[in-house]
Image (cartoon, rainbow, N blue to C red; front, side, top):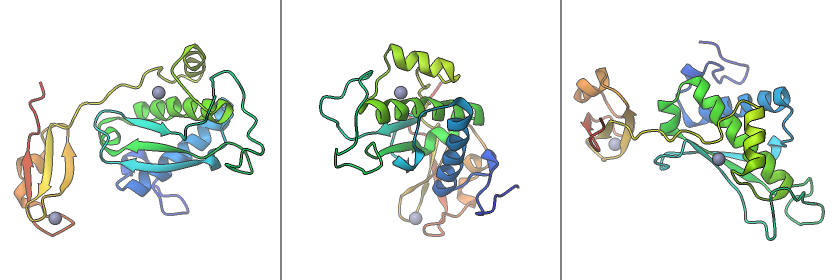
Length: 198
Ligand SMILES: [Zn+2]
Ligand SMILES: [Zn+2]
């Protein structure tokens, strides 16, 4: 598999860890910002991977800015939040969404979130209104990100009980889970179906 100088995969399908997902997504966003001419300062964006978010593929977490309105440009100077401009916001990526989305849907999701970042950095707030819709459409991003389904199978460590993997369809791991070992405890895995999916 191809890896860049920093040792991270540049192939989406080779991403295996949270750090690699952040690295890959940040690199994609950096390309998208210049390709689509987005007015986004990526240095002001922090990244996290959420394993809790149940149905949202990604989200931009922003601080509350008093009196902010979409369409009214903020003057960040002297706001005390950051000398260079807007306050930091956080791009929160759902690990389960990454597992269930292909590359095209993942990058479309990132572009959707970049429009939120662009709005936040300009206005101090963001929504899904008319301006968002126009902007999203202009960069081939969905106005609403598809909610992804809960995984069909959850693999848990039989020793400590932590959830170690999720699968959306039957596979070797699901069929023969007890033959695999958890990385946390080196114990066998138990497979369960959290709910009946169609
Ligand atoms: Zn959104
Ligand atoms: Zn364990």
